[in-house]
Length: 278
View 1 (cartoon, rainbow, N blue to C red):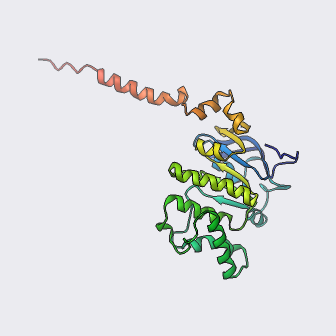
View 2: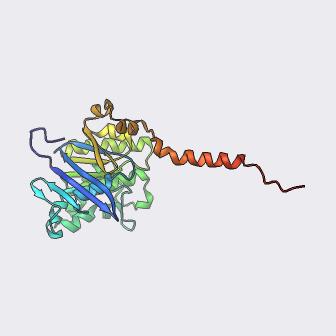
View 3: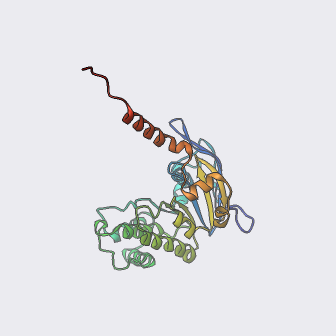
């Protein structure tokens, strides 16, 4: 996953450990994300994918290890120094995170108001441009409550790219969408990478989406990196953890609780009634 020209990745995590309340969530994570490519990070729920994303933008700091953006180590920066670096990132949240009280125009223009000195006319033109890119032209005056789930995701994506970030982070971008709407989001991820030349990091456990958009893949399991490689390398991997995830097969340990419940129920159903006498 290193740069094709032999250089370092635009984002790097080096030996990153993270704990919450005594539980280790990331375990010695070392990764490089190549410039201009889409890297999909897969793994079961709770394996540390979103926590990893938050380290990349400095929302969380590791107990051990390093986080780099280009030549700048960001895990030790103060908030004032982090702010301009964070503006190089766009972030599509899992649920969109639109402001319910703002129109589509207000939602998308918000980063421009906060971080630029553009005039209202300039902001309006930017909003029109990004809405066109995500196929939502003509929706500027709508409120989030008037949009479908897929439309909300596209508006949130438009807001995420309005500042023209160098890196896009996607947290479960197809969650809650039907297969057709999911495919729309997948195609948008590819289009934006191509047209805006962005680096994309996509966290998902949607396998259809993962193989649709990925140039490179990473699998996390129990907070550790199990495998990195191309989609073809993942498909041909003999690693049992990778294959179980791709096939959707639970381990014996994961099924033990279910089996135990069934055994208890069978045992309860076969218990002889108490002899109460004549």
